[in-house]
Image (tube, rainbow, N blue to C red; front, side, top):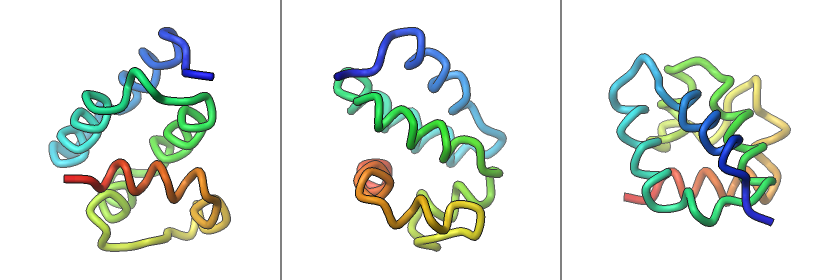
Length: 89
């Protein structure tokens, strides 16, 4: 099941970050995948967008594969899939 328009709008709003680099990566992600995001993808994004900007940047650019606050979640297939999508150039 794909994510609803209201939830997609909230995610896009939450994706506006303090670091321009995060904004650019997230904008590219939404341009590519917004129409096909599942509810599970939305939950993953919501959790990722709750972390601070520097930790998010480390995850998005692959500087780190895990951060303490998401240690358990990042081992799940859903988190790995969304993170891979976010890291695509």
